[in-house]
Every structure is written in structure tokens, then in C-alpha cells.
Length: 292
Image 1 (cartoon, helix red, strand yellow):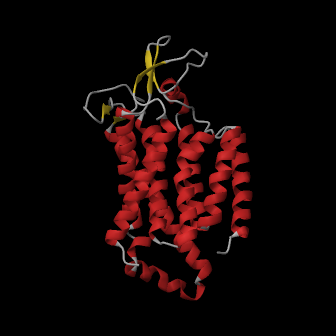
Image 2: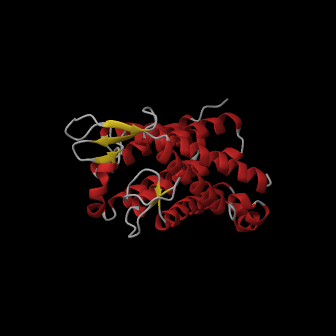
Image 3: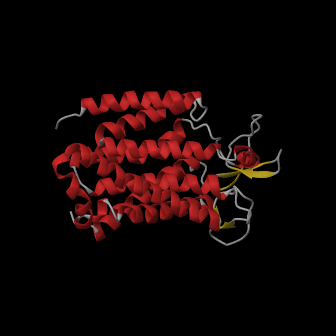
């Protein structure tokens, strides 16, 4: 099987440039740059340009949202395992499933894997939007398992504002995915470009249905993320600050006490698993509704 060395090389260069810019803008740590290059090179190289552009869309939007009302969200940051400057763990958690799907797509050329990739990206984008915008809600979030009011930023807490943000975050990825496929058609099929909008009616999964599939997959994956956060994700208690937190240790190095959950299941693993759930649902919905 032909290895796409040109695409891999282009993906490496683009990922390195974006990683360097993100590092300078404090969106990525040094290890985060490595993680972004690993996922970006793999997705660009083995998936193709629409795949790589969709990854960039997620990264740009999530980075911008992390800076939105950053001062207001600072008081909530102590609950989260990590800050807005993403490290390699976060990069692999958000893009790792997509990278594995891209490699599988290169090996099999199974069209459903495109939908799986969109579902994975929709999930991580939806979850980011839910976190970054949901914590700004004036209404107290409620625990997804019991409906009990909890403090903003609590793992497993959901709110109407956060849920709407989740749907929007997933749908945006679907719209972007459809747009990038259209742009690719401009490049590959220029003589038939005027007929492409009509082909959306014949093959709606790539155009009209993709935003809907992405929104549903993103919402489901994000809610599954919240479910894990409320049940089995490792949550600690800081005796010094007298608060629950995802952090294993306090900033001063003081170890925190495991309050509940599985010690190995940190936020990065929760994000990765949830993206797999979103990918699986998107592929299933495409299989049930789309003709190839």
C-alpha cells in the first residue's frame, strides 16, 4: 500500500508551525506541541486535507474559547486537572482517537470512518464548548446522575447553557466538515463543481446530514464525559483548600486525597473514551441514514 509521504510531510510542517504559534500564545506547553505534531501529522498524513482542516478548526476554536472571559473563569480553574495551556496528555486525549481513525481509514478506505472522525472531533469540541461556556452560566449546574445542584466546574455537572453550547460545538464541526469536503471537490472535480451542490441531495450524509450527525454525536459523547465525571473519574479532595478537585496534588505539591472514582481514570482518559463513544455513534448514524 502506498504510503502518503507528501501528505505526511505537509502535515508535519503545518502541525509544527501551528504548534509553535500556539506555544508562543500560551495555548500549548512544550509537551503539548509534541502532542499536537503527533496527532496533526497523523491525521493530515493518513486522512487527508479535510481531516486535517477539521482538526485545526477544533484547535483554533477551543483555544479562542479558553481565552474568552479568562479572568472570570480563573476562580474555577483550581477544580480542573489542568489549565488552558494544553500538554501532551490533553493533545492526545483530544486528537488521539481521530489519529487512530485516520490510520484505519488509510488502511481500509471505509467511508464510514470519515463520519467516525467527525464524531470524535465533534465530541471533543462539544465538550470544550460545554466547559468553557457552561461554567459562565448564572444558573447552578446539576449533577447528571442525581440532578443535585453542584458548584460550577464540578465534574459531571451540566446546565442548560452548557448543553446548548454542546449542541452548537458539535454542529459547528459538522458544518465545517461538510464545507471542507465541498472545498476538496472544487480542487478535485472542477468540471463538475456546479453539480456538487445537487450531489448533496443524492448523498446527504456528506452535506446536509453531517451537521446533524455531528451535533448528536457531540452531545452524546459530551454527556457520556459528564457521566464518567460524576461516577468513575478520579476526583480528589484538597485538605488545604477544602475543595474537590481533579488535581492529584495541589500547586504547592501537597498530595490530595482520592475521594471517589478510579485512580487511573483522569480527565485525559475521560476525554479520549468519550471521543470514541462520539465516533462510534456518528458512524452508526451514518450507517443507518446514508447511502454510499
